[in-house]
Image 1 (cartoon, rainbow, N blue to C red):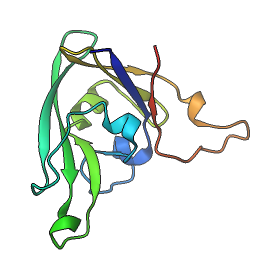
Image 2: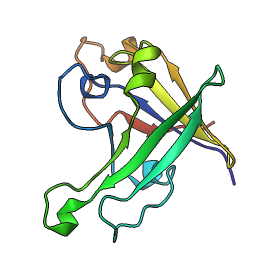
Image 3: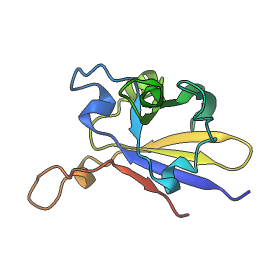
Image 4: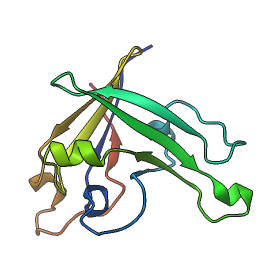
Length: 138
């Protein structure tokens, strides 16, 4: 299996600055991004997978990849999220515009981050909108 990498520029919602109550970071329904994560069984109600990531210092973090699919069960939600990341984001001191990088080498998941406050702004100083996710080619 080849190494897979994805990255996400953090938004105010991701860092908790909006005070919103949504759990975790929204993961777009983009096949390139979703293929990073294990497949979830959409016939189950809100299927999830617990994933253990190692950071650069060797600390272990457990995040949860979940498909909130209650729209398929007479609800309203139909979205993927990566949850239980708040502690990592806070302890790393990450802020809006910083980027998390998730890697998988076939054996283990890893997480790192990069400070990119400047990169989130365009030339006129306006925040760029979008999901902030991208597939990283190494």
